[in-house]
Length: 172
Image 1: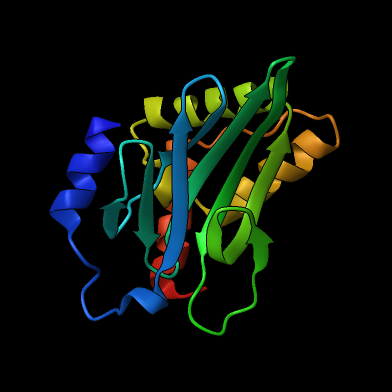
Image 2 (image 1 turned 45 degrees about the vertical axis):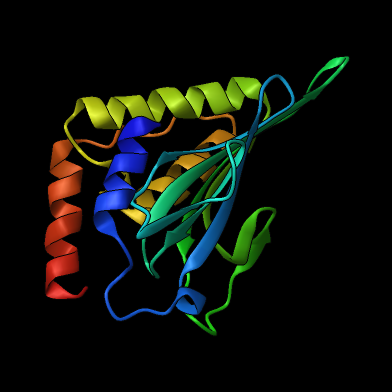
């Protein structure tokens, strides 16, 4: 978490964008009760509210992973991982708790076994020296659909990533 805070402190405010144009993600950390954190993504700004709460601001088009976990006296009641694309002002989006105004959901998994599997897939992408925030949004949709069907998703390789970057460069 320190690395994320340091990166966002260096990033400052997104150039030329008022706060109203940024996607706002409220994070909470109450030990053994509620934990919301960003697994990957590059916020443009961070606002610390107190030692348990902070808000991250993402510019339109940026991709990030939000992990939410909650428990009560009987055990875990929520384990969820969402990979979202921050939307621009007036753009259609889905609502997600703690995300304002919402986002384009690229992937959503519920339940700790699926969340843990996704964290492993994200680790594998990072092991290939690829920033998961820069991975193709289509890959995250592919992973979502394969996991929903009980199938194994294709690996995101450096070759796939290069093809995505070239396709993005030519505007396809």
